[in-house]
Length: 90
Image (cartoon, rainbow, N blue to C red; front, side):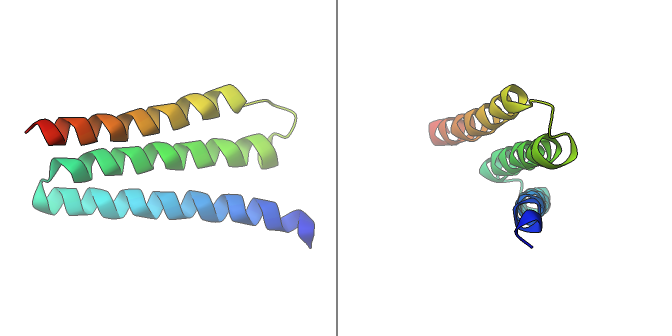
């Protein structure tokens, strides 16, 4: 039972961040608020990060995808930070 718990949590995190990205993207499409765009892009990158986590730990356990996961999560944080700064200047 416990061997299925971790992969289930990883998949649920992937699904949650994907759903958040889609909802933020749809809201941006309706309102054209720039901060929603940057948030949607951040959550898209976080979904990719979670997908890489699933691939790293569940699908390909012998592969080491720590560096790509770290780079994608860094890109997600930088994207949101850039969006905050960009939105504050206007």
